[in-house]
Length: 284
Ligand SMILES: [Zn+2]
Image (cartoon, rainbow, N blue to C red):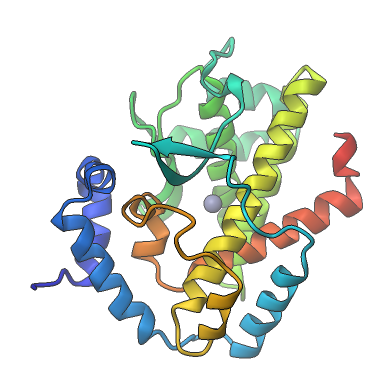
């Protein structure tokens, strides 16, 4: 079978996202080809990162009390479990203002206000674009997605804003940029949304949703590493069929950025540590 080179996968995600989603749901040849190509890449993956660092990360994840995803906490697509946690009820509810305006209000007189305005001004907001992401325009990181007046837009823009702020506030190059950027994006999103939500019940639902995101990040880190030669022993620790295999396609970086799942997992560990230690997270 002819396989698609990795750059083609990235191109497909950029240009034909709808086709990818359809393939994930219906399990077409495209989905099979993507999996075949990914398996080849991951088998031969030779961590550029320090292997000792990866081993230490795995040990930390395995020592967490409950690192596995909750089987009942995920969306079902055609009765199959998808790697997308069930969202709090208010996710699709409208909010009084467009997400970017609501965020500007939340930052009020903060010194970051001007920088945030600049990020939003340069971002590419398109109605109906529900795939929130950060990208580069003229060499500067910006946000792509829909700037709607719904809760999910608020949370998603905050996350991507976190990536853009790290990019602007840090030096041109520093080690572990990806982990720090992801951790900052997660922390900013969780804390600011907590500030925004008025009811205790909504805040609790939000925080437990975020903990499931952490579990998902740990799971994908272990799954990805278990498929490499150095970490094959990890197959004992996880259920590789926990999610439907076609629907794994919905986890974009699992296909486009080999080795990236450890970045998410490490960021989640940092977030949990920061929130527990400094912000008494459970009382937020
Ligand atoms: Zn992110």
